[in-house]
Amino acid sequence: MSLRSRSAAAALLALGLAAALLAPGCGSSSAQPPAGSIVPVKGVVTYKGKPLARGTIVFEPDSGREAQGEIKADGSFVLTTFLPDDGATPGVHRVAVAGLPKNVLPLKFQNVGSSGVEVEVAAGKSEYAIVLK
Image (cartoon, rainbow, N blue to C red; front, top):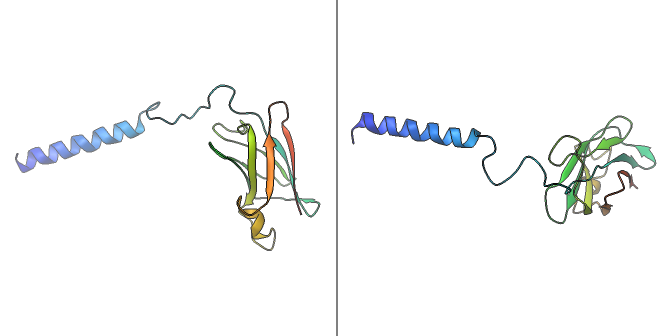
């Protein structure tokens, strides 16, 4: 095979890989949740009785995709798992708040493994108070 043929073959291979990676709907993971697998979740996060004014709240289930939400100035949040503001999977979740300096929120609350905060997400309930002490 000539150098020119090899270059053309390499270019075609690269183009094919790029097309496969960018093709919508391909692959095993879906951007949409299975029907009925997500329930709406919103709430307020407080620390020492006052709303947290920023950060990212994380709900990590025992299995499956975690949910996250940006905390607004009034401490409120809405969780996203697959699509914006869709909620979280039902079941027990470990909860943490990330993205804050330790002088605002102790590091133990910024990791799901050390926060000690758990919430059970259930169909029929959409409002959750996350109280950090």
